[in-house]
Image (spheres, one colour):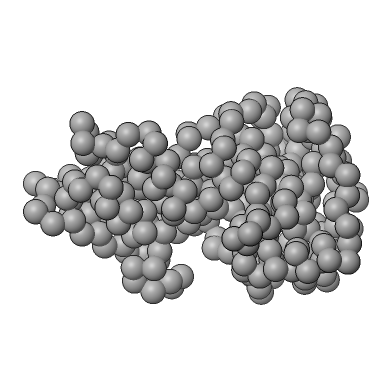
Length: 293
C-alpha cells in the first residue's frame, strides 16, 4: 500500500559567516549563525514497501539532471547504511531559489532524511549514522536536520549549537540575471586573501550577545566574508546605497547571490521593497518572511 507524507523544507540565511583558511584537503572551516526563514519548498513523499530500494524525484528537471539532486543523494546514502528497502517518489515544489545561499537543496535533503527515519521506525539509523549521512550530503544538512530555528554552526558544518534570535522580519532580494557558484566563491575568497590579510575577528561570545539587541546594531559587527568576492558590483553597490538609508541589518547570505534585510518593523521592509522594485523592476525577485522561532 502506498502512503504519503507532506513536509516543508525551510530556507536559511547566514546572519554571520566567517570563513577560515583551507586545510590540506582544500576544505574551509566556518563560524556562522544560521537562521531559518519562512520561505520553503514543499515535498510530497510517497512510499511503499518493496524488495528493492528506489528513489524518483520530480519537480527539479529545470535545475539538474535526473539523479543529480540532493534528495536522490540523501536517500541513496541513507539506504546504504540502513539497508531498509522502500520505493520512494518525491514531488518537490521548488520555491527557494537555487545558487542563492539560502540552503534550499540541503533543506530538501534534510527533510527527506527525517521522513525516511520516520517510516523506517525501529530500523532507523542511530544518531551518529544519521549525522554521517548528513555530512556526506552537504555541510548545511546537519543544521537543517537539527530542527533548530537558529544555530551557531562551526567546523565543516557538523558542529551545531542552538541559539536564540528574537522575532524579526526579513526581506530577501534575489537577482534574476545571475547566480553565484559556491566553489567559485571560495576560489575568489582564497585569491583575495593572498593580497588582503584577514581582519581581526570579534569574539563569538560578543557576536552572540548582539543577537538580543536591535538588529541595526549588528551592522559592521556581524559580517559575511564572501561579501567582497561576489562580483556584480553594480547590483550590490546599488543595494548598499539603499541600505545606508535603512535602519536595519543587511548582508549577503551564504556565498550569494541572495541579499537580505532584517528589521523589527515589517512596514520598513515594505517601504524598502517598493524602493527596490522602482530601482530594479523585473531584475530581482523578493520575498518577505519572518525568522522562524
